[in-house]
Every structure is written in structure tokens, then in C-alpha cells.
Image 1 (tube, helix red, strand yellow):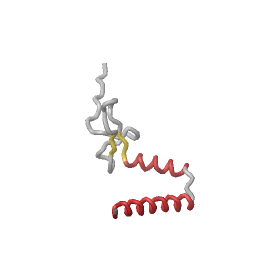
Image 2 (spheres, helix red, strand yellow):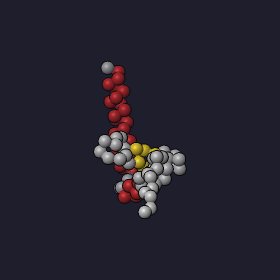
Image 3 (cartoon, one colour):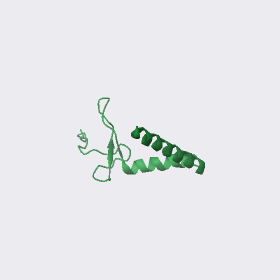
Image 4 (tube, helix red, strand yellow):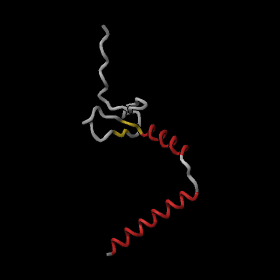
Amino acid sequence: MEARKQPSQTPQCSWCSKSQDEVAALIATPTDKLGPRAYICDECVAVCDSFLLERSVVTVDNCREFAANVANAANIAQEGAKT
């Protein structure tokens, strides 16, 4: 009977299986109370980000609106800090 392979003690990406030694960053789920921790590496995050960006509708108007909202929030925070 073939011996079972023991799981690696070094955390690895749940998506691509690269170990934390092979990537720049490895992000873990916040807790393992609900089961084993899951991990995702910076490279897989970049792939997911690219995937989502390709499917989103980004326009100049959306970017301007976002920038205006950020500036407005900053002004509100600044005014609140003065009082």
C-alpha cells in the first residue's frame, strides 16, 4: 500500500499551489475556525484583478466621479477635524 503524502507545512496558494517561498506575498483567510485556512498569492490576486478589470465598464466619467467623491470625502473629513 502506498503511503499517503503528508501535507506541506509551508503554506501555499490555494489557487496555483506555489509556496510562500515562491511568491512575494501570500494572503491567508482571517481564521481557520470554519475549516482549513485558504491562501492566495500576489500573482493570483493580479490575475483576478486583471480578469475583473477586463469585465468592468471603466469610463473617464466613472473615474472623474470617483475622484470627485474621494475629494468630497476628504473635504468632509478635513472640515470635521477643524471642529
